[in-house]
Amino acid sequence: MRVVVIAGGKGTRIAAVNSEIPKAMIPIDGKPILEYEVEIAKRYGFTEFLFIIGYMGDRISEYFGDGSKWGVSIEYFKEEKPLGTAGALGYLKEKLTEDFFVFYGDTVMDFDMRAMLEYHQSKHADATLFLHPNDHPYDSDIVDLDSGGKVRKFFNKPHTEDFISHNMVNAALFIFSPKVLDKIEVGVKSHIEKNVLPACLEDGMNLYGYVSFEYIKDMGTPDRYYAVCEDVRSGKVARMNRIYSRPAVFLDRDGVISKEVDLLCKPEQLELIEGVGEAIRYINEKGYFAVVVTNQPVIARNLCSLEELDFIHAKLETLLGHERAYVNATYYCPHHPDSGYPEERKEYKIKCDCRKPAPGMLLKAADDWNIDLSRSYMIGDRPSDVKAGENAGCKQSIQIEMNKPFALLEAVKSIL
Ligand SMILES: [Zn+2]
Image (tube, protein in one colour):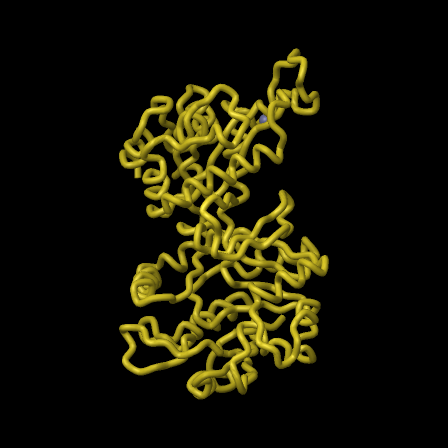
């Protein structure tokens, strides 16, 4: 399987670099970004590369040659004129007859390529997009997924002020099948995110989002460059690969993140408690997953549909996004054990293993995201939250006062 690297990006001046060079050749500790990408792919056994080069592309081909120095093989395609991120792919239809990875040449990352490929294959996807939440969704390209991970819609920036969505951002890393290339006109300038993927979707192709919290960042500005360099040196980039377990802070929703309202079932009822944005941002910055685990018997009681609940969670993520914070995942228990309400939905009236104090949601999250429960915390406002944390084997479970401003912030600062 080939790895196509789009390295035709215009030259750039990063403060640490004196002369103008192609973005992919920006050095981190004396090594071009592109070289890190080659090494990652090689580590996962992918050794066939196709570099799309353009502006000052000779600097790239002179450095990498045929790739033998790295134990890989590299072919080049040189763009005669810039054709956007996708245009050059149009010329490569004959070469790319099997599914292939697409990297941008100026991305610093470390991710489990096998896990993404397995996901892509399990979905029989025509294209798989690497997605993640970030701390500025309000000015990012957002991808809307259904509950099975299939792409429903693209919301490219800029967004209106009242835009509400899950915090699911395109990280600009893909697996494409050759079918995607049919949507690229030869010799015409086009972009993967703006033109090609929306055209694929419109055509009814199967696009899937692969959600992951591994490290992937591009170099936009000198500030970001320095931050990324530091992350490479400190080992953070490598450590965030999903093969390594990470700790989480599990959070109850009502009374802890959002104001407790009896049986919240309308998005307009949802309001963040003061200090919550800062608290969750703190969790994010400390490298812990922030995972919401919430009992939502409103589903069993039929006071709220699954779609409405999903929209409430989208609103929660939007409000947090405005405070530069994000949750990694949300789990809810739709069940309720007591029947007898006239409006109830029978199928959810069961004794389940996810309703807190049972640990089901925490165990599922741990399994989904390789979370180390023994280094994780549970924070809630009820004894059943504390019990759920204990039942799951968390390091510590903390009960805070319901709806109290800054209670969550105090709690996370006392433990992390
Ligand atoms: Zn349940």
